[in-house]
Amino acid sequence: MATTALWIITVSSDQSINDIATCLSDEGLTIREVLEDIGCITGSADNVTAERLKKVEGVVDIAPDMPVDVGPPGVDQTW
Image (cartoon, rainbow, N blue to C red; front, side):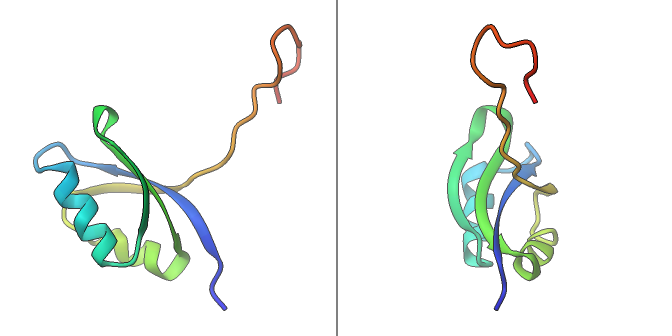
């Protein structure tokens, strides 16, 4: 069974981010957020689907979404 992962998709600015999001959804991405101000879309899909998403017109890059924890304020070590 394929494992679903979270992805960050960077898109070009030469077409509507919402149109690109629709195409990504049609190809199997479960959209979480459309971040228009920074030109990114986040969502979940398995690895096979993520490879297919790279071919969608307007997609510049796809990278795994990795959680980041900077820790509580006042702590010297953040990682």
